[in-house]
Amino acid sequence: MIRHAGLIARRVEGLWRGVLIEGPSGAGKSDLALRALNHGFRLVADDRVQVWVDAGRLYGRAPDGLRGLLEVRGVGVAPVAVVAFCEITVLVRLGTPERMPDPATEAVLGVDVPLLSVDPFEASAPAKLSRAMESFDAAHKRRI
Image (cartoon, rainbow, N blue to C red; front, side, top):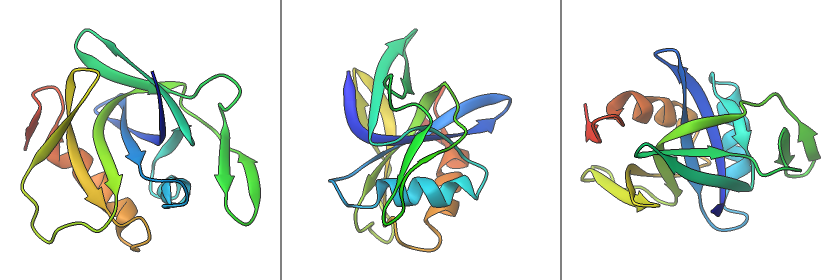
């Protein structure tokens, strides 16, 4: 299955864990991914993400032809170092977050993934992604 989204990853306990970033065209998915690269994340996929399930876990990678490319609005498409694939442990939906949201999940291909709303243009957005990855225990599908 292909999703209109971006996917970034960072190493957590020796494994690449990912944040799937979704939002409408022009919402800031690539911009947030670009800024997250300066906060210890690596690109997996920009604009389109191929997702699949294996052993009850959700994974993602870039479709062939898009691997290693990141759209930088106003500059063009830039080559960047990538991670070939990763487990998706957090789903981010771009928008205006609630001040104190209740924990939420969304099923993707039958796998419940912690869901977080993020304003992609807040200066703290990349730090919030890191914090979310530390706050969710994907293996047990719960908030720590």
